[in-house]
Length: 89
Image (cartoon, rainbow, N blue to C red; front, side):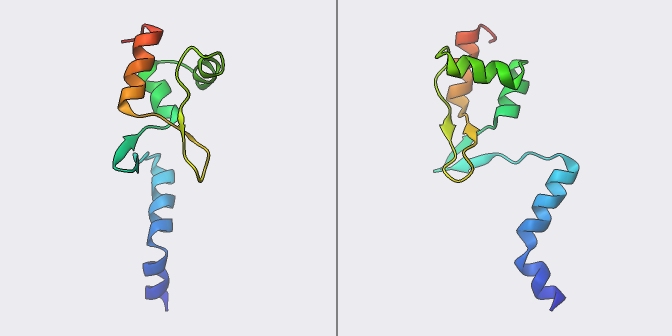
């Protein structure tokens, strides 16, 4: 039965390994690649709260939301827009 258990929980093992090794896999929805808030902030050199404040104040377009988790997701096009608006290109 251990073999079946490993087979059925392969994704769970992969997620645990990714978390342990601090690996961020891209989110692909509808054939489009999205980045998480942490990845966007790292690319822009800003804090998460700065990004949230810009969104709340309408300085940047609202992020796409993952329907299951509610996470903010940004496409490459979104990131380029934010860079241009914020002057961080």
